[in-house]
Length: 200
Image (cartoon, rainbow, N blue to C red; front, side, top):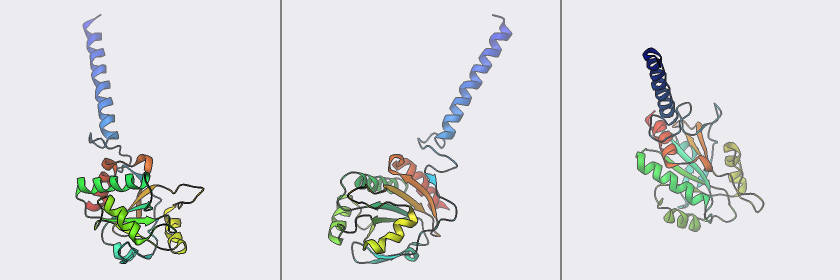
């Protein structure tokens, strides 16, 4: 094989390898293991979609409103206290993401099973997830919670259907920004987006 042809083939091979590595780093957000699209690991919510106005009691009887949460980003999870699989996994992922990034954010769980969830059960759930004092578990009647579910696009728990296992990130102005369905939720991806929102 002529030396010039061998040199051209070698150069093309090096360029191809560099392109593959570059694409891999770009997809992973710079090599940190986070799959980033448009700068975010999660799915971008529709523009202009705000957090609904609400005023609900948490597990301690404290009133929590959408207004009281403004000023810093909020992580919303839709959970119920007697859940044994997706809900604990969601909250553990949130806890790890917050621990890893030290991001200053609100963490809010919204009940999707108001018939079952009570303050006592909500406290037990938070204790089991090591989130006591770190997360509000919002409770209420179906009528009180329905507008919140609707605004976030959440299917509540029922005998016929499992609830929507989504985590939604809102910015400090109360705008819904990023969503993570359960099967795409990871501590690394959530941590990336939480830290990005908190740094804005």
